[in-house]
Image (cartoon, rainbow, N blue to C red):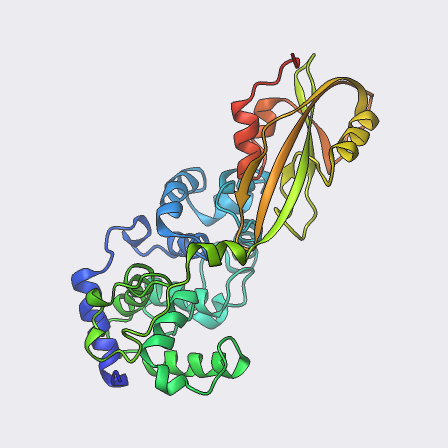
Length: 352
């Protein structure tokens, strides 16, 4: 088994030689950029985050700019990253930093962890990267690395149990090196993301290959198994539009559940239910079903069946949770990625 005293130095050496060094949030260790990257990277791959990070920073270059923004604008830039609660917490945290800390980030993990959306591991990563604090991280990738590398130490604890979590935190803390905390922390992230992967780990590239107790016994879940683990849901999306303006009807999703707080086409269990709502909105002129499309979430596979309905709207007072929007207005809101693609690729016009 790997000696605990050797783990940190070996990982630091490996990271400096083989780890990632050119990510945009690594340039100056600015706590704002580090914080933003850590929130974006939660349950999201680096390749995906790279497509969003620079655009987000260009619009919100610092925490004060983010705090001053409207939530809908933040959600609009977040659209496609998923896990939208992160964006809501990010916005709330920015306002807390301005109101409580004068726009400056606390310099220790304990104080950082008291802010909205910053858990213990994220706080430790920000503190380690930005301020050099010796603080342990324990995200999903790190848990997997430690479970494999120190399997005998953790034997007897059920995976995911409270006892195992306490043992993992104690182990993560005990493994911290005296020097090179930034390289060590980045090394844990790099090892879990690029080498000690959940599926098809590249054991030959691992700095602990010679004495890892889990080498050669790692299972590889099949894609079919991963697909079966998702629940299935089917939604009819009411795409009601006023062709004369043209405008589309959108509603804000509930604060919990799928796509919380985002603006969306109304979702129904059936076409009949969608048409009933359309008739409540106005006089229906024509309707047509569009081809179904699939959208994969972490735990749900959504079948989305858009129903285009052209209608003449009835007068309706303004409402903070629903309304008619022109296409530019709609695309400026926080929309789920598949709804954004749908609206952007199909012009609002009369149905044939």
